[in-house]
Image (cartoon, rainbow, N blue to C red; front, side, top):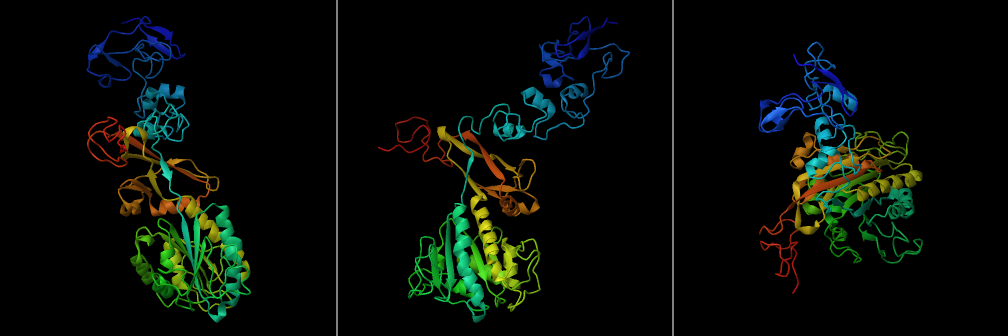
Length: 509
């Protein structure tokens, strides 16, 4: 039997060595992964490395000790199979029953091999977990970005918002119209300005029964209104009377109909801006004569601007005759069902179809009866618009310099909750397309855009202090003769001066 000496490696762990030297090579191999335990493949044989600074090596210890103890003839077990034995995990402070102690997508053993920390979700602190860095091709121990030294992180798409307000101007709405006139400027517009939102207000309603003054419009005094409305930089009044029950019908028929004052020669739809989302605000004390499902279908048929049944590009907010929430100034969120009771006094119906459309599109609902609280209502609607405009749900990578192209097979999206919804950052789950979102995904890639799933978008927009980062890896494709995304040309080389530059951009002259 070999004589064993009790020796101490550089890190202080006690190991048993035969005369403090490594044993003879054992086993044949072609690579270290074929060797057991911590052995390495050297010259075709599996050997145990000699201990040096920073190394704990287990050599064959005396046969009369228990496995894993100093003096055992068996190496310590690796319970979780992560490449680190249980004794080494105890030294590192990792969990011997969990192969990925910090849940960053890399096993504890892989982290030790790479030099990253098995106890840190993001070793280098650059916001990307270690496992995702390896997936992107970046270094988890160095603060860097996708595509090595180039930037392929997506730019947040700031979405402009066009607010279409439809006001019932029937005889029972006098007090409500006065409250609306006060609050459109004092609360809605002021909050949108403060939130640095690119907005536009389009009011569809009677004139001069409804008059919006400065600074939104060009009207100085609504007590002596001019013959016709005067538009402002962000405000347009489309003159068309709306009755008690026909808001849906009026909006559909005037979408492409010129107004009598020349404000909207192509209808109120011609005032909508390309790329803007739409927020409707319905104000009425009565029910709708048209079903909300019919309006939704017909509205989306008018223009792709309003999105699809799977991904609508509009929200419908309602100030209607429904019962108040508790507390009364609180909005009814889209997670609450249609309320059947009405508010008193002055309501003619609970406006079930307006409610249903708000629920369908993620909008807010408020009671109409207490118009003294319209300031609170308009502030909440404005806050919702600010959230929707400040954090988009669609991202497009910038063109990387150096001739690379985005590799949309390697995308990482990270959500960091804000102080209003505390939690740990997490990598979002990718699915194939928008239809697959229903199975529990978070985002999908559509061509050259990264799109959040509808439910994920709604949840993240509700977290007003949260953050979202999108990282895209790159591949070197310039010069391969194929015109890839973000390439202006590709002439099968990376030479300058031949009309197509080394970064695949067109050279003038």
